[in-house]
Image (cartoon, rainbow, N blue to C red; front, side):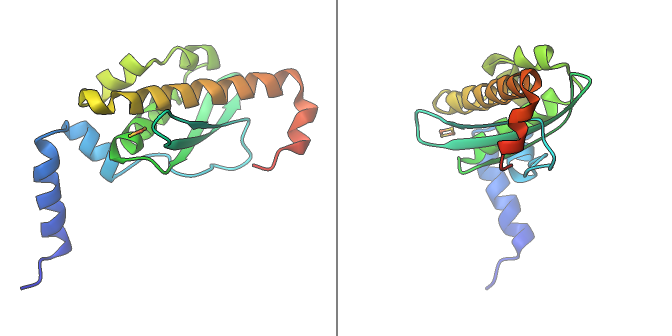
Amino acid sequence: MAVSREKLQELLKQEMRKIYSETVIDHSMNPRNTGNPGNVDGYAKVIGPCGDTIEMWLKVKDDIIRDAGFITDGCSTTIAASSMVTEMAKDRTASEAQRISQRDILDALGGLPEDNEHCALLASNTLKEAIRDYLAMKREPWKKVYRQY
Ligand code: FES
C-alpha cells in the first residue's frame, strides 16, 4: 500500500519532534531566505570543521541589512540555523547583526542537540564574514567590479 507524501512528512515530523524543537523542524522543512537575492553588498562562504559549507549573501542599504540569503550543503540543523540567522539579521544595522552569536541562534531555535550546536556557530560565523565583506566593500567600492556574485 502506497503511503501519501503528507503521511510521510507527518511521520518524519513525529520522529524529528523526539529530538528537535518545533522551530527547528519548521526552519529545516520550510527554510526562509534561500538563494542569492541578487545585486548584493556582502558575501561569504565558510566551511565548518565538519566539512559543511554555508554561503550567504547580504543586501545592505544605509548600513541596514535589508535582505539576506543562503545556501548550504549541510544537514537539516544547518539549514535551520542558516534560515534563522538570515531572519535575525534582516532590519538590523551591520554592527548589530555582527553581534548575533551562536547562543542567540540556539535560543531563537529553541535549542539544538549538543552534537549539532556547531551548526549554529557555522551560521553565526558565516553571517559575521559576510558583514566583514560588506564593510570591506564599503571602504573600497571599486572592488565590487571584480565580484562574480
Ligand atoms: Fe556540520 Fe551541521 S553537521 S554544520
